[in-house]
Image (cartoon, rainbow, N blue to C red; front, side):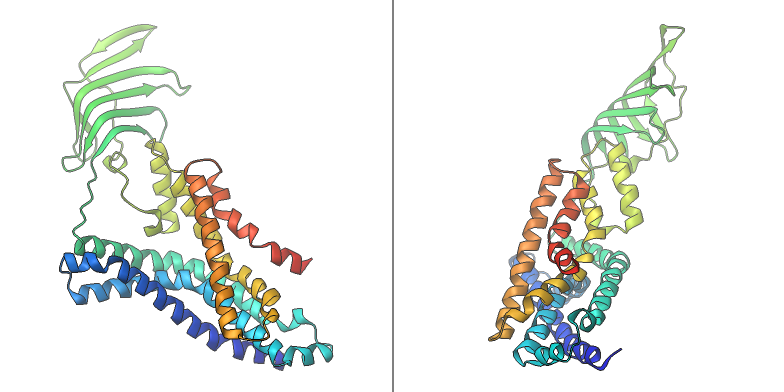
Length: 350
């Protein structure tokens, strides 16, 4: 690594570290003040509130890292422009792209590192934080579900029920449709209720209608094994943000099979892969815009960072809402903001 490249990193890393602490503090205070009146109303212990704030730190790091990198690189480049250091570097014939290679490599490493940090650390701490928050705020979540429709993994069995009672693991007004391999109707089972025995569903006074040789036959037994897991029938209260990538993939598939709306969950799943690349992208913003500030560099760099962050998160919010309403695909909802803000990168590389 060249001397100038080491100098650039020595300028960048301390600023990035302190900027990260600053943005983490802002997010922590925002979350605290948003829930402060609820903590006071429920007489939450101070120690528990502090624990909630500690558990929220990894998520704050995930949110703050792109802004910290943007601010640090913009401030570093702006300071070097203002002190005429870059003028001297360019006058000596040293190109900009060679100077910023260490920053780009660092940004790429941070992008990949943030994905694994999110998957291994953030989701677990966020799940613990939300669980503790619900206890402190006395927020109870019911797993009971109404108007249930579930398709089995083999896609040959379709369950419909008016109500699922999670406490007793019981389905009410149950209708089960059995289909052949070709998707044709094979049998229909009706029962006032069905209860999970631990390995299969036991139906109360069932009536089975089976098609045999194009003739509808009525029986009072169930000649089929109904083994679909009861967790699939319960109301969706789990957030994809609290599950690892593998767990989230299985969870979304279960929601799809259960006939639940899953576009928003799938968008959040794809966003987990797209969001870390924000760090790499914002470096190009700072490189292209950081040198425009000759005065008030600290203030202007901070305003630039916050402005771009607000624009990015607002665009991401809009695309995620559009994906939730299925106006655009979940993949587009997650990646459109990243692609849009990549335009300076493509222009720089072009």
